[in-house]
Image 1: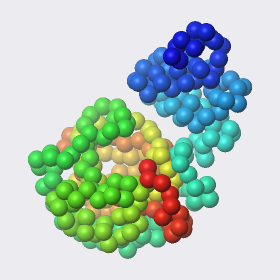
Image 2: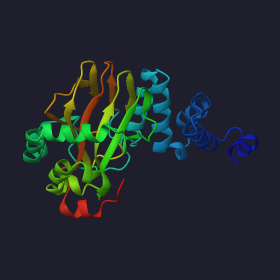
Image 3: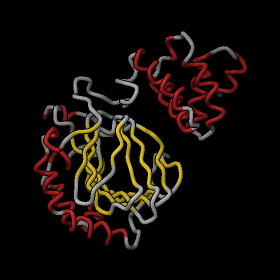
Amino acid sequence: MLESALRTWPDDVVCRGYLGLTLKLQGHHELAVPHLLAAVTSDNPLTVTSHFYFHLGDVLQRKGDNEKAMEIYKKGVKRGIFRSEYQRSLYNVDRLKAQPWWTLEQTTYSSFFRKLESNWKIIREEGLKAYSDRKGFLDEAESLRDVGDWKQFELYARGQKYAANCRRTPVTCGLVEETPAARSCRRGQVKFSVMTGGTHVWPHCGPTNCRLRAHLGLVVPPGTGIRVATQTRSWEEGKVMVFDDSFEHEVWHNGTSPRLVLIVDVWHPELTTSERASLSAI
């Protein structure tokens, strides 16, 4: 239908934008670029939409043209679409504090994170035991992986408990159950994440600024890293690090043996009780 409309109105940049968006979501990245670019570079106010800017920048980054992608993102900031060129989440509460990396104390959940650290060997044992038969470990479903193998074992998602998986990891889930900011985070997840050597995850942003993401290092071989905005770190076994995944982040594993971490999302600490109760799931 869009292609037919474009043949009738070849200069309609709105039509071109939606055609480009459709092509990109179908995986036809090369075909999508000229249509999305025509829409974003036009002066038509109907093309000032987050999805055009978001997906054009994403496909340019995947083509290796980071400089052009950043130009698009910065233009999106000027148009009021993104909070910054690095923080490009689309479901936001605008007053919330924004920074890529957080200390445990800044999150206000340090006692919970310290408890995870104190129990990290038990958590690692549960994660490795669950992974031993691969049952319940699923490929990531957002087409974020460039190359390699990246699987996840979900314990909570959108505030709902995966009871069958939690029965296999009772200590881990028990610790989460004690912490409402993690257990009830409808805009987040709790999951084990396994990444094998030779894996790269494209630069991407999470959907919302309403959560913070904690990683507990469990098995950390050499050659692993994560970049959030402009700063790169790696995991430490038994240590929690926290970042705001609404900022652009990229992950790689250039080693050989699998990397295992526990991912725990928590509500942003500046959200009110009523906001936590009323925000829709993502």
